[in-house]
Length: 163
Image (cartoon, rainbow, N blue to C red; front, side, top):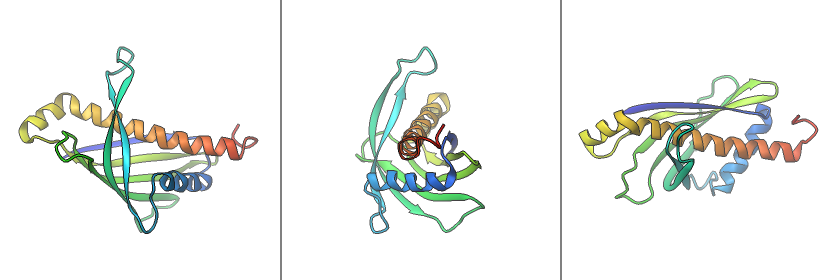
């Protein structure tokens, strides 16, 4: 198992961000009666400033469930995803998506969990060489998408407060 943890600051107060996170999840089709959604994960191609600046969209079947475990001002959602197509060389991930209070005007999105590289020993070698960086960049892209959705909603709804 490989552990990853990515964090992204979101320029929106925590209490408001909770509402926008719910809107984002509803946009995916998630509800209390339907916890399974299809996520489109963006897998970046290239790295750093010399990278190609491109990404591949991969489908993942995700199960999202609010957890009863809260720590202070923190909202946690249990997340598990697997490849949309069984034969795709894409790891299965298990972890949490958390929204945490940070400052009066900002909060943080945190994706934390583990995944098992596909293809046994060969997959572990690939993961050690480049796979982990791809997984971290993919997690970063997901948090960027969710954070962007939250920030856009806040700016549109509260333009005078979002400055």
